[in-house]
Amino acid sequence: MKNQILLCFDYGEKRIGTAVGQTITATATALEIIKVVQNKPDWEAIRRLVNDWNPDKLIVGHPFTLAGDRQIMTTAAEKFGRQLHGRLKLPVALIEEQLSSYAARREAKSTYNLDAIAARLILETWLSENIEQDWPKSRQT
Image 1 (cartoon, helix red, strand yellow):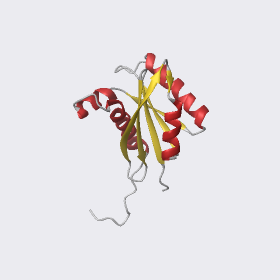
Image 2 (cartoon, rainbow, N blue to C red):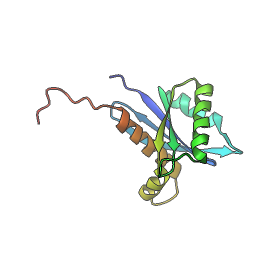
Image 3 (tube, rainbow, N blue to C red):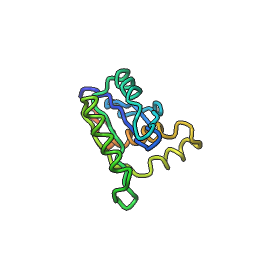
Image 4 (cartoon, rainbow, N blue to C red):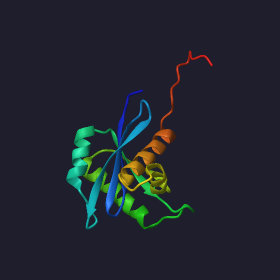
């Protein structure tokens, strides 16, 4: 199995949390927070991240309500995903997410780097749902 590098984005109206992960160990690390000004992401900062990490795929959190219904941010995240694909020419996957910011807040115990921690949690979910662990066939239990 070839290792793939993934960049994840937790899109928000004011900030975008970012995280990087890779498929061999199915681990992720929170990176930085990118500002959104007047509904426009800092595309130069996003390009810099892509150039630094050279990802194989981009992951975007796809927020829904707890009942599974669409909300305003659902459409905004979809639009952001289309823009990422159009500008960067990389595959983009959306992953349904709920309460990532709440979980990040519980983990961080403060608001510092909250959006990047939420992106890490989203990416860890994507990895756990999409990467099969290949255990050696000869492993004894």
